Length: 257
Image (tube, rainbow, N blue to C red; front, side):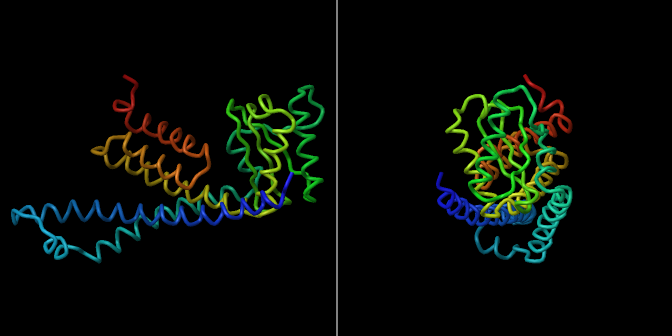
């Protein structure tokens, strides 16, 4: 296992993640402003009977732009701060939030014992404390490392991974997660979970207060953002959350046909 290669790759992905997330937030602010200004500007221009660039610039309201930008950024910031504080418990808190099960020695499950052995081997090889291991009851092959520092880090693995992967393949997956622990980008990932929560609040607001926007459009916008700056399975989480919110807020529209 080349830990240093995985560590360098994780560091590059961290920088890319920050840049893409920043672009996503800026894009959300700009799109919201354009929508608000188009609606208000359109009604004023319609009275004149024509639309051109000069009129659009004439009706451009910088004060409104700043107010809308501050409102969007404020919602994202407050929602993110709430989630970041809720995750202050470190990696274990993230795993519990996902409904993962703590794996302990003494189980008769061969796959669980093999997983614990592999994690212990990787910890010894990388010179880090052996982290607690959590199991997600999902069929897909996936894993994650979460925590603010190596001392409170945890490793999470899906049931599909321990059942479908060979020992060598499982070692590769766990080694990759240890690269996140060594690189220290777990702290950033927890903060990004909080920021993602802020964007989910925007989606929830649109579902509740903007009934003229089809609920699938709202969900698809959030899913596309998650695909850009989230993990390979992150968009499924966003889709699932907003699907449940839509079913509660718009039962008639979201009811299966």
